[in-house]
View (cartoon, rainbow, N blue to C red):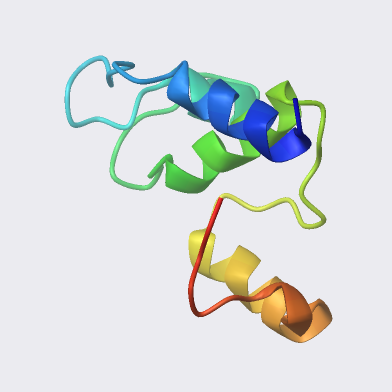
Length: 89
């Protein structure tokens, strides 16, 4: 299994995970990322989920952030060859 396959398998295994309570951003990915349970509009969990998936797959992203745009900007500044206009797995 390639690292990409492992990463995507890790992500797919999370299908069906829900916030509890609903619409409060309280999910295990945020708890993992912040080291404590958090909730509310200040804690969107999209990038915490991505960071968690990489970690669970035995990989690390080169920049730790809970912000999608911050990670993209890091790549644009530090590894622009990795930024694709046509994303693929």
